[in-house]
Image (cartoon, rainbow, N blue to C red):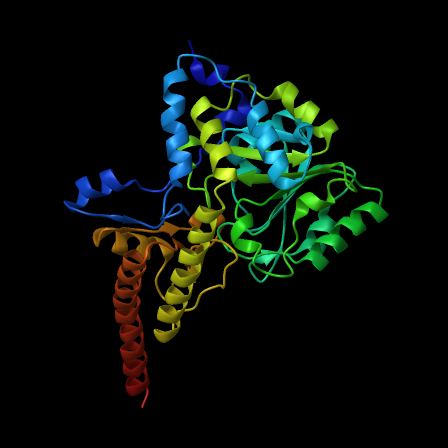
Length: 386
């Protein structure tokens, strides 16, 4: 059997998502006793105790298939002020992105994304033999005017990450409303996916738009939320899509049965009512973010201010991959951003106070040495030209 001939062409050319390094493999490779992971934008506090206890209780029933996520949707609907029939549950936002692609994308369709946007949108299009039209950025953030210009009658969907991973940039309420009015004026109505994975972190900005509030006016709008970030449930894989009943109905036709486990649903329901854990997580994040900001500024290291729980940092004369490898040897995992066409940057998650101190200390050593070499090199060249 020639397996390659049997594989769909779009799959054969498909580059899989490469996850960040895990703690145990780094320990083994470098002979380290402890490793700090600040690469995957996880909540350093972990899950709240209410969610952990809910998982424990659910364990007795794991021999049965989970229910059709109705209890989860009711809990989310109550919390978010939207109808249960306007919610689709998935195994993380990643699965929901794929469900959208499987539901709506035909071979040859076009989607519009921004340069430096979360890579899973483009991957979902490629998986369905659709084409991703990449709009230019404004700085490193989404340029919604440029994205609107890229939308045509051939456009099946537009993806907006707000805030965006890995840049941490966000679009304001004014920018978002202008974008929506632009498409409406031109009588264009592609599926508009707004990924709000970092919603709880960004909501602190007064001009940040809650896209779910626009669903009654724009039935083609799909808003993604995740439990992996502020709620600390990344290992359980849980996300929800908020949308019109018509869009939800179509997505549910494609959604696999029992796609969200009993444990994930139980944890999600508990997390939705655990406001204290969310508040504690936000307080820890803000103090950690500001500490890293101060450390980077004091060393003259450039970075983007963030609306997520991570920071995108410029690498100067080094590359992001070089920074990644240098920190890895010290027992600290960050994320290089080459796949986002940002080879001169890397991303770090805001962690616990001790982890943030470790990071600032080590990055100052690495980039400080490189800065000193740069100054010495410039002085040598200047002297040689005298």
